[in-house]
Length: 221
Image (cartoon, rainbow, N blue to C red; front, side, top):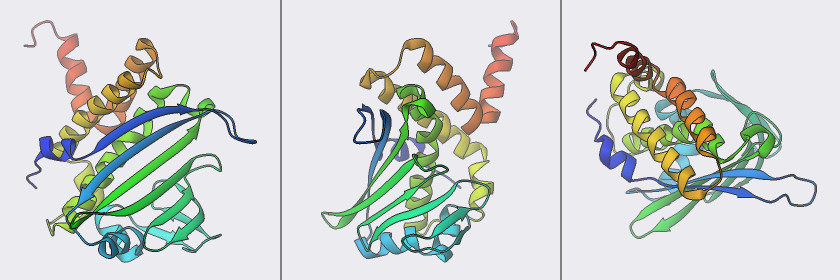
């Protein structure tokens, strides 16, 4: 594939917040993304809720896909479907009862804006730097959805995600999320540096290893 990495990174708006506890829930970190697609709202909704389409840009999904049912993404998170209001809103748990993902679709001119919030308790995130555990992954998903809706060939999404080109995208994504955390003032410099290193190893392992090799070799340029 030939991905326009700069435009794909710039297409996503990223926000990180620390939110106070509400009722019986404690403090949490909220990771928010927004991206607009040149597709009708109903088509975007179908692409993010139809299992046969989800597996073509994200990963295979199974389960009882209705409110109160559970889902499992192959090799990734599972959870419970808390709310579904076609074609505009879905809310579900993500890997744990207090890790909540909410997806909203709204008309944006001739296209559709997708808004995604992923909220996790502070004891899981540790600080706003916890955004780096999930933010780059969601960036990759929204990019995959963009390519799919545009009719670009993706092939096996898992193979694409491991490619050098997508790892280069992910490296830029990690930097963009680190900048969002820095703007939010929700993490110390040490927390952010540590999270950035771990995130690069997770989302761009080949590039992170190359950087480590260069730093450890005095003869490297």
